[in-house]
Image (cartoon, rainbow, N blue to C red):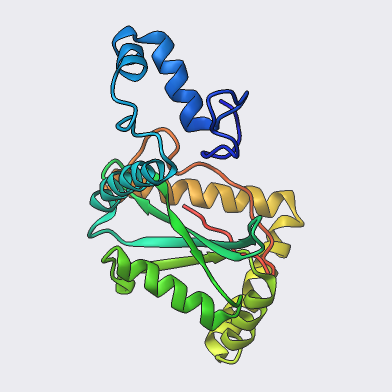
Length: 232
């Protein structure tokens, strides 16, 4: 509700803004009389308000949430979305999100965590990625997709991939197909009609499921050397 950091810079009793945690405690005390009585009349050295305990409580909550997330994704194939940015302490941080499909066929994204990295090179990002996966006992063999917001690193990936003739041909054909289809309404209609027939055939054969948010029509995105897109 406050839209600011968990901890406050001034958590004294006379502070106008003690931080999210202390302000939440005061708010709850006003709502529940027994809690207010415990804090006002109970032992002053056992109120669980110190910054050390705040960090421990936050860590405990994070571990419980992460345990649920790992149970949700365990044994499934997944993709990773990774971005890096500098925090207020001028440290480079890498954030990782896992993307996977649950039993209901819904695409879910779960935030895994943030890790400090000293360099934004491909090798450093790889080491951080593998380290975070190993810390949660996730096998990299189940990884099926990667998304990064680092243009310089993406150019490295493009350079390496284009050294393989088959991959280079694939990425050469993709923009040609997009340009050819996108330049003509008749070609686009023909492609959509063909795709519609294929979807009907797969639905009748039980190969794919139907439902809200599934198999929706989407536009053809133009590929770029510094951008990756996920499609469902």
